Image 1 (tube, rainbow, N blue to C red):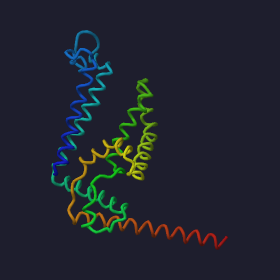
Image 2 (image 1 turned 45 degrees about the vertical axis):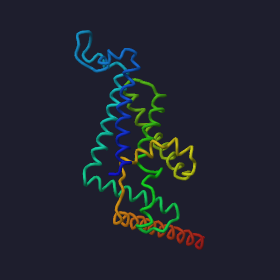
Image 3 (image 1 turned 90 degrees about the vertical axis):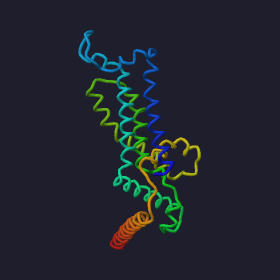
Length: 231
């Protein structure tokens, strides 16, 4: 792993740890932070403190921390590290294609591991957009809460997809790239610097996809031509 990868992983973990402090600070009485933790007590029903909205803050931040920790650990496993290297090879190949460069392993190796249309960034923006959308829903009864999550998920995913698609077409916009920087940084967790043979595999896969798409496109044009002739 490069120093940039290690720095990105450390920044992610420490950022989540810092975020976990804020609900405690916002309580106004941090010395009573244990109140947000559900525990048996004699003052009312069991787990009475689970009614506090702060509990959900702690639950969400704990979840983000665990997921980030898992990503960090997964990158240390040799087999999965190789998967991340192929992910990096894919990004480099797409970057080279969009730059109009010759698709050879040596030339592709010079391109960036980061790409705005990455699925890792997509998942982050689904989460971020979801926070704002679900904030408008509030906290209705539990069945409406579940239904709203299910019905609004396609809308949120669609917005996130259009966002990264737009970013992919406007990579020269510095303001846009600055706003989307967290999604780009997060890719450091799921990409690794690939070898030349991995890049060669990525190039071959891309060329095959392009060949199939071209064949399908030619077939559609021929079909349209036949329809026009028959008409």
